[in-house]
Length: 179
Length: 396
Image (cartoon, rainbow over all chains, first blue to last red; front, side, top):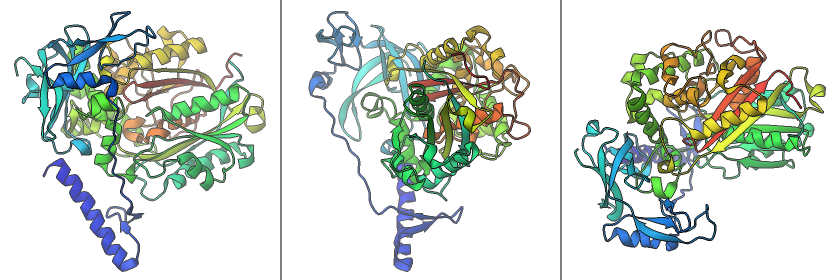
């Protein structure tokens, strides 16, 4: 059973319990099997999905469809900003320009996410790493590698644009040259 | 600098899976104990600062709910949040209000009811605590995952092992076994820890602090009224506070927490302590061991050990009583539990009671210099507070 199925099964069990209790005692009281403690099974469910503004950085998303990962550069200071931002706090008022992130980088560190957040619980275990790119700027992303035991600090990685499935949208990941 | 401020009363709930109480009932356990200990009434309180991270619990306005239940409605109040360092930030807000002359007596309560949501939801909420859009939305990091990025770098760079990290868990479970307020009362071995499952490689379940319900409270008073309340105040000697980038990718290395280092140096400077020999000027430290790697990094960030040598303190058992400096005699976040908003306040309560010499046998630090340190980190080094508590009134 995937972690998603386990989580959903757990909720379903509580829901069924609360339905039974509503029929017998009139309220959605559920009893914790371990402690025997009575709890209230919430009758209100909040679905939380945000709608975020990307208007000022939409070039970033347009470039993904061309296979490019963009950063911004502060015109006054030359500082590369990644994730891209359109304001340059070290030189207020200065404009930023869009630049391409280099493809080549080196892996700094990584982890394998075994226990997943609910909204990621439909995936198999995934690797998240941080690489220092050739321009000295770090990128955090999934590392495309089936065997994490092959990963080493300093390993060459490429920054690639990929389609994330099953959602089917473009994002970027790190691809070790050998893995 | 303002007026000097002291702790004059402490309260601490039992930490654990507290399905038996609501958020307000849980908070009141500590509030009542702290008021009793200070022997003051509700009328004496000028301001209530409630530390609560929330999200996983049902009340979006925890301060007013806790206050109503506790008979404190009508008081000036606010809820503060600085992730896992919420408790220390609440103490800072309260300290500042008194130091400025705006309040004489302030009640600080940290409370968290994490078990109102199922575990995958709690994992999700904490995983989102960083930079949601750039590091969570696409990559689904978790709290152990963030710290695992540090653990991996630390292991490869300094030759530390998973067994080394497990030693921290063994120590903290050992002391928690003597702390009746702790979530875990059972001692563990390195083997138990090594056999536990990975939650975010190389971090295992037994390297991790649990999901905890709990509360802790302190009453703070100005130097002008302290004498009327108690003859044994615990003074807030100095608070160092700092922060770091929301995106972990913006950090230069993953071997220590810059925010914690800055907060420590700030606190030492304010208290006039020599950062080089700081262990000699402390009786004990409560450090933010949300994961075992975090305790090892804390040794270094606080100057107890040089860079890369925190792991040596672990190998030589230097942070047990009798070693270089006793650390996390409460059991730490790892074994006492980590109710996010309560943790920093819990550290203050623990240090006060240690300095008063009233904790359980076997986990009482010898009190020689009369000073303890709380190291409270929010998120993954996103926020950091280092607070020095002392039996002696600080210099004006």
